[in-house]
Image 1 (cartoon, helix red, strand yellow):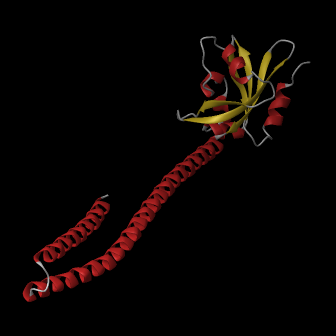
Image 2 (spheres, one colour):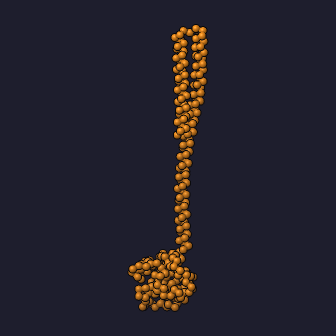
Image 3 (tube, helix red, strand yellow):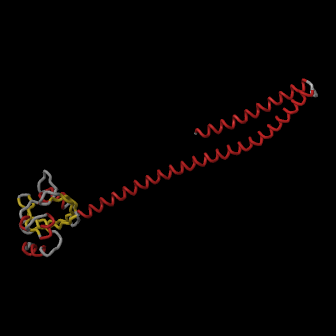
Length: 236
């Protein structure tokens, strides 16, 4: 089937998306026709500025195999989009999708291609990837903060428990202190009375004195233990 090149050109000129028609010459793919949308996409002033441009000047699919690189990159899946990097006239690069297909007439082989600018979609994808990464980082930071808060809560609860336990010990010590102190005062008075009045024998007084010493020592030991516990708890 012989292709009508003029008819293809007229048809593609009505298409609002970039379209380029390539011919093959000495294993090179050269632009035979480009529409206005393709001209604007690649940054040229006139459509004719694209005429005879090598496809490898427009798309970064270079390889040592020359024209076969186009088949390798652009025609690997016929009728599907292939994503490559493209070159504007000013040398800047941008991502595109190319849907290309080979056609033949009786004498020549051609490539018909539609090009889609992917700049915005790539930008959106990168922004989405960044947003997902930021969300993941924020979640990880929140998890760390939550773990630290739980640990701090447990430490505070442990300290409150120790403080409550110590307070109970101090209250108990107060009652013991009052009781022992009352006994000590009573025994001291009995010893003094017996001493001055001569009512008690010397052995009895010695016994009272020993009892006083024992009670006083017990009281001192108990108080020292409580205050040592309080000091150790406060230092943790």
